Image (cartoon, rainbow, N blue to C red; front, top):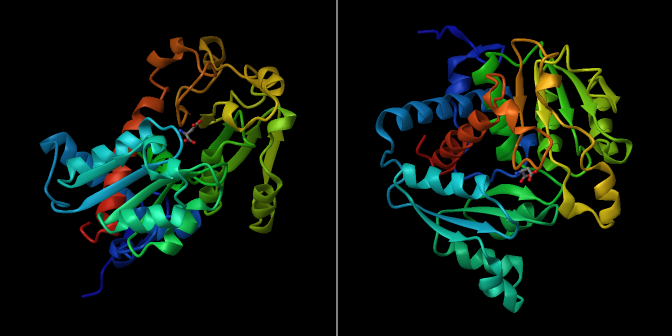
Length: 329
Ligand code: ASP
């Protein structure tokens, strides 16, 4: 019997079979370039099921007997602990390496050797590393799936998946939305990945940043090549009344060589109650977190403040990814 096309949650009809086709088994997750609408739809459907599973039962034994090596060369709270929680809630185990200074890395061990070691004890490796391309290097040497949890100023694909999942869960659609990204668009890897992911959608993008923290040229060129238009401005006041999604970011202090320059831009934007009074009733404020002053605490009680819900969604997305690459979704 012919299957009927289903209405996709992210805005386009597609055959149910395409949405169900996994295609993730044994794969690395290195960049958002690996995701088209059908793959996003699939992961979002699984993430939604994971949410229901956690809310009803807390955990499952889907990944019982599987081991995740969680290798973090850079600080992390949410990404690291949500990957761990995701694995544990699915019945798997974790080798956590959060302090590489206490591992053989401090003895000068190379990334390939560390990866070869960890993959001999585990089934999947999550890596965060300060260098762009490091996750791809790890994937080159590993036979087991490698998931990029942030490679310097490069990409943070799992963050972008949870960001887009949040938009879908909160606003019910992506196409037709006005999205403004605010803050450190130069060094913020989450906005790099999210912009690339949004290339496939019909959204109006505005990049709001101080001159020295503008979105990198290569990402703007990629947008132009894909025929997508965008607006750049320094003024958050210009966008606040019309945006559906205000995606705020922290100025990435750790990427600055000149700290005086950081001091000049660190408080450029503050989303406070006064600004929120001018925003639409149905819109959301997002932030990948941690925040360091760019959203005032008074905004937290505003129902439009979605950043804590966004953070929770990270665990569901990572449960979906782990189950998919390990062939259990
Ligand atoms: N947690 C995000 C990241 O790892 C955002 C940030 O650190 O500002 O990129």
